[in-house]
Image 1 (cartoon, rainbow, N blue to C red):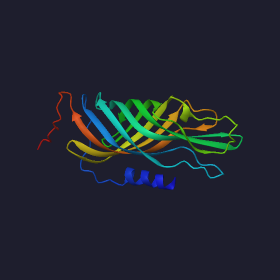
Image 2: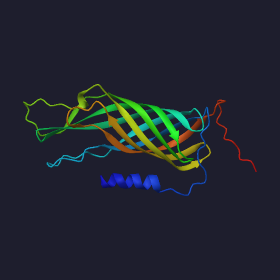
Image 3: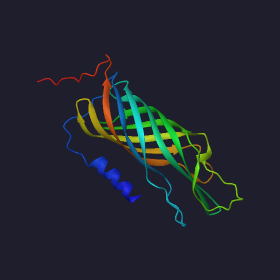
Image 4: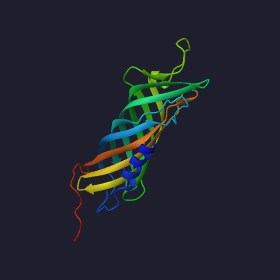
Length: 213
């Protein structure tokens, strides 16, 4: 947990001397690709079950609708862990899934933005028992065995560095599931460090506006 907090701190606040920043404009299209470092929001059990820090990959595509906001679509590939408690016993399971988001990004300043999106996650592999404290004859499951999950993603993005058509940005993300089972921990949070690429503007080009002398 402490290590993940330091990752957030370094990438969110570590770059302060920026020479320029992205200017949103109607018709602009950008794409972000990079690693997503995350973990399930589970504090751990008294018996020693912990939520591991994992690394996935993510892709975001934004289409600016004006100078204040953009429509956003995202896709993440995750090895997701779920933890469920019953009678002071725990079951931990994990599965590979595709996490798809759709929503709106609001530009707060030239370097800072936030987004609120709906997500749907789809299992693409077989669930695995990471650890269980239940006897074999007691039937308990987690959302790792479900085909689909739904919920909301909240993110805050900060531009670390920008040059011409590319930039390095950091997203602090939290995913809130509305399909968690009773006494289940299935929300996750993490940081998405990505390379943002300016694809095109409204005219279908990628020419950057020149600064006037």
